Image 1: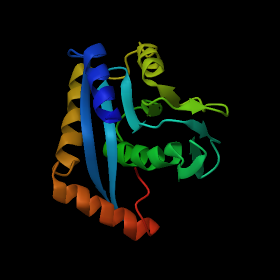
Image 2: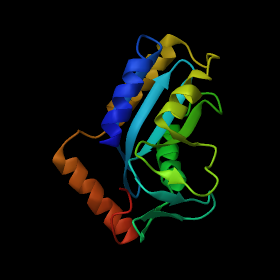
Image 3: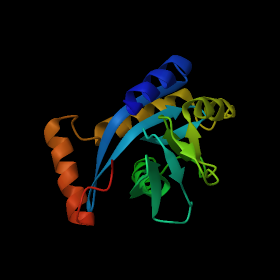
Length: 183
């Protein structure tokens, strides 16, 4: 639900020739796969976006491996999405190694009704905050042709969007972590 909401918002706000949104991208790595919710390729940078559709209270520490969601007196631990997105960032940077340093950005978006009870890390946004954040990038870092080349490189590298790809990715996570960490 959260990924669909965010996809629609980005497509509505950032359409046209300066932006290209890729959704549900699975990339092969040496030690398995990684699955990225969204990549927004623009002349103003490449944004690797991890989406979380959570409710309740969120207790987060940018340096800790897990964060906590509290929902009706129940506590749930989940992987720090900044750490999760770091692996995604590395995969994208390896594919787009020709881009200038600092032109690929990590973004985590909470789309649900979650309320942070600790300080929210700077690269973590709500949907409306993300739109404002993306608008703040107005300096071109690549030409239209280079942007299209990036899209082509990502589209060529991505695995097919199929149920089998998703199942293989879950198996990859289980092999790496002993259970499925990305949710």
